[in-house]
Image (tube, rainbow, N blue to C red; front, top):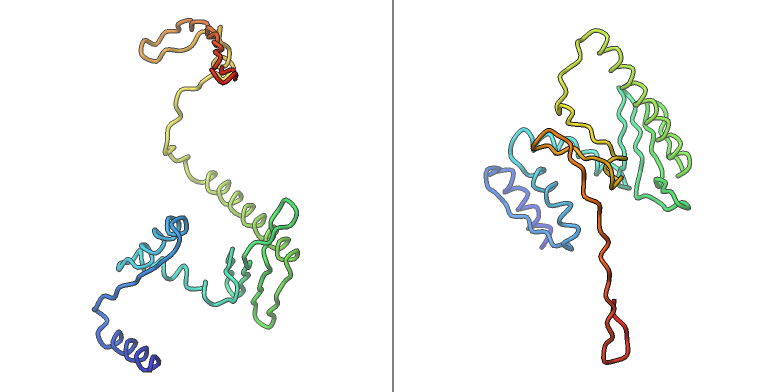
Length: 193
């Protein structure tokens, strides 16, 4: 009977796609704090929501959750999770390489090495592109203009003058006085500081 109900619900959603349905999720609060915003973005009925759904559509193609998904023009490399503890570091569970005429699953160490190589290649490509872009285009305005610089050594030195932003002058900082702690005895014979 549940099979017929499931098929009927699927048929009903195809025939009347405009009807909204309710999704109830029960999970620990710490997990919901992380996934709640993702779920809200995935179910938004606009172009942004469609983009989120397209971006995550490959998640369910694989047995293991993908940690990284590298997509070339004809080849893909999926670094698979969950992460395995390896001493003080973590390694992916493995990787899947799909390219025309060759598909292979890699063990954790090979997957880690390949992931590192791909990240280095991506970083190199981005840095090269930015350098080329800067040669042909004027430097863009910074999003956040630099603020006043602060001399950290002067801040840590109690005797140094400190810049006072309200008056645009420097004022000596008063020396810090150390408070003496009183020790008291309790009726139980212990001493509290």
